[in-house]
Amino acid sequence: MKRNSRLSLALHTLGHMAGTPTEPRTSAEIAEHAGTNPVVVRRVLGKLREAGLLISEKGHAGGWRLARDANQITLADVYLALDERLVASEPTPEPHDCSIEHALHRRVADVMQDVEQSLIARLAQTTILEVCKSDH
Amino acid sequence: MKRNSRLSLALHTLGHMAGTPTEPRTSAEIAEHAGTNPVVVRRVLGKLREAGLLISEKGHAGGWRLARDANQITLADVYLALDERLVASEPTPEPHDCSIEHALHRRVADVMQDVEQSLIARLAQTTILEVCKSDH
DNA sequence: ACTCATGCAACTATATCAGTTACGAGATTC
DNA sequence: GAATCTCGTAACTGATATAGTTGCATGAGT
Image 1 (tube, rainbow over the protein chains, first blue to last red):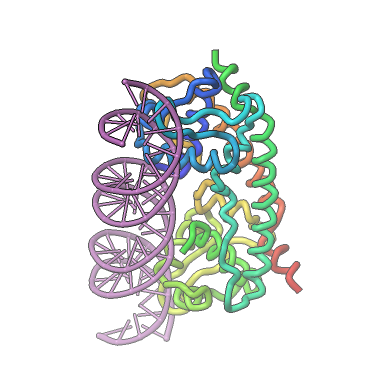
Image 2 (cartoon, each protein chain N blue to C red):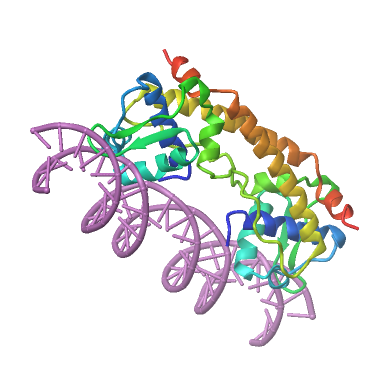
């Protein structure tokens, strides 16, 4: 798939959970609805659990549910939980020390950093609940 | 290498050309300085030529040089020439029509689009020449 | 003619990621 | 306590993207 598929899957799933927050959903159910695989679901939702957005429980009547209210979870929370930074800050500190390369790299990295912060700020303005309600 | 290596290579090369804009450089020279391969250089700089930023000439005393003044080339020009959009706008219009997924996708795509425009605007504020001069 | 340089096609190598299979651990039901 | 359900995780496969490489054709200049 594509690079954003994890974010898509996470948001999609949280969106549905916002509707019926009390009942847990299994990885298999989520995977079927999303057209993917239960293991992929567990991998992605596991990130959200680590970030405190979801709770998972094993055994009978187990599954996934929201760790807090859907109006307390913003799109930024989900984006940050997956730690897929969009900025792609160039990781090479240039071993052979070309000053022009350094100057350019620093400038681009600064802009990217600002844009990343701007993206997060924008995503933080919207909760999962708001997006789902806006669809009518 | 990484995803941003083409942008790095392009900016790095243009930065050096800004210093001595009249003399052409061969792909082999550029590749050696950048620690990569002449064909890779031609692939990347070919994009800049298509965008009208560079001129390439064959034969003796051929090579690459700036198509216009270095203070008339912004970082945004280079970014756009490579058409590597950072936004990663999710390409899947969701064949099975889940309204929640649609709503979320639209919201994220809107934010991404704005952020992309913001990135381009920021990059457009800096010319190649400025970045190289700022390194002293 | 010869040499130098780009243009381009085809192939290889590598990294990332989704998908898949398999199995273990914990929780519930009987 | 056995059976069943579910997550957790490791290991493997397959697809895709990209850098790197080789080879050759084309055009420019000597």
